[in-house]
Image 1 (cartoon, rainbow, N blue to C red):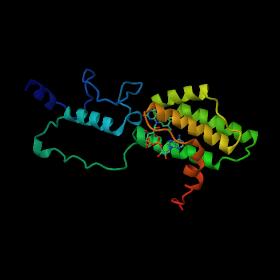
Image 2 (image 1 turned 180 degrees about the vertical axis):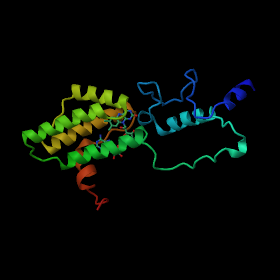
Image 3 (image 1 turned 90 degrees about the vertical axis):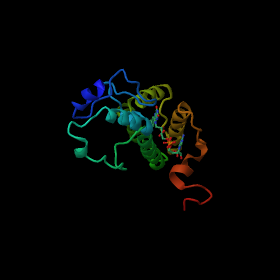
Image 4 (image 1 turned 135 degrees about the vertical axis):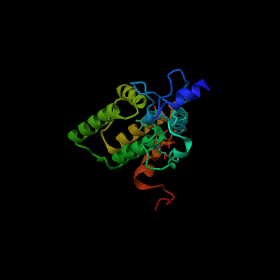
Length: 184
Ligand SMILES: Cc1cc2nc3c(=O)[nH]c(=O)nc-3n(C[C@H](O)[C@H](O)[C@H](O)COP(=O)(O)OP(=O)(O)OC[C@H]3O[C@@H](n4cnc5c(N)ncnc54)[C@H](O)[C@@H]3O)c2cc1C
């Protein structure tokens, strides 16, 4: 009861106290706040619901606003961000020149380095930067870059315990559509 009284004095969303265990899968930002683009959607939602429970409206219960219905146009979690990002990256590979100039090779290499620094999920970004340092970006042709990217994606798949992708089929997946005609 004493805790209820204390809660009733709060009017705005309060962060979950640091001693409260964070739901599994919630990654913190460098400032210690939960990072939505680094966390799975379910884990972030569990944290948000925990945080909401700590929020009590000061006025009587009748004047509490109805909870907002869930919507689809929310900031991305780690999965949504990842899917969109891989789509962009593999699509760039699919339109990369078959015989790129030196300048085009430099551009894609710079782009990938900057991408790995700016990627919004910081834990993902750190691992991707380490991967790029270990496995030098290969961009001598479309197929070379597409395969390098496919291997980079597979490294993340392995880290997350997902099946790896057959890189001999990256152009079917991202450029031409499957050979059985199912994308035509
Ligand atoms: C650079 C980067 C680093 C990431 N690091 C992390 C991380 O550290 N932790 C984390 O939780 N999430 C990370 N992610 C997100 C993660 O990779 C997935 O995007 C996310 O989990 C959603 O996965 P998904 O199963 O929907 O398919 P995704 O892995 O997003 O793949 C999308 C589609 O690409 C195709 N595909 C799969 N593998 C390959 C491949 N090797 N080559 C070509 N096509 C392929 C498949 O058709 C698949 O449906 C990262 C994303 C990026 C872009």
